[in-house]
Length: 321
Image (cartoon, rainbow, N blue to C red; front, side, top):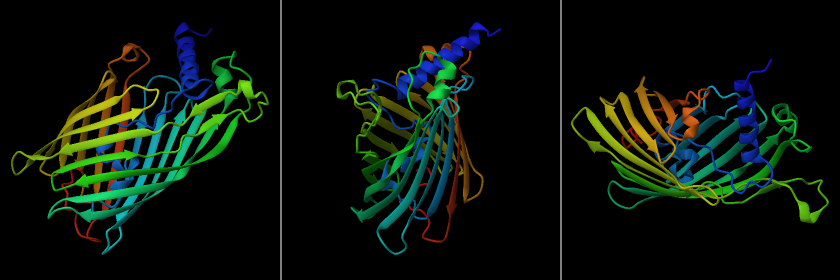
């Protein structure tokens, strides 16, 4: 016999998937990150090459642990400057998975940046990216959670091109960036529907605008403090504001907390394992009604960064960003 708890889980998943991907969705947001300060290339193409060496970063996020079929996000970024030039380049891969494969969306982009000196220790970078996303939606799996889901052909790796742009200012202890990672609004709909007055829009890609900034304070020789801010705006969705405060001790240990406005509280920690490798962890606890549910154990992130030092000059900016 199926318990009421399991029924609630399934109903919640069906509702979640429907809200994000099915008829009458007005806006689709980009993936969400708590450790955005270590994953900047995903939100701003102008960041490419800004660390002064070849950098690879991978991030895995498990949303709402304990909820069957809850969202999972995997991100992989690679970027570097071109030696003896002002040009940087990068590649970004993002995969979103909802409902254990019911909804999958994969973004693959190539990025290029150009940097100019605005003062002795400050630089201004301009970035462009091009690529696209592949959307897959399995209505059969969705019907496994809700038998009343309308009959609809599956979507299998439907490709949509996209482009993004950004600007990024950074000095030894300050950075600020403004970007729109995807500027083409794409509507996914039922191509087999011959009634022009009854087109079923499955999802609409909206432009997400990002503003990021942060400042590093040198408290003493071993301790740095960095407050940071991320603001994301997209039509049809609430404004997202993330405020964080992190400390870096002895260039090895980082720790701090963050608050996502009207959404979640977060704790973060990181360890610079070697000069090349950094490991980061984060935990979110929802402050909404969803956070009080017994099946929601919060959200987790794991982050790993590798840097190929000495191939180019060592990074001018602090390791903190």
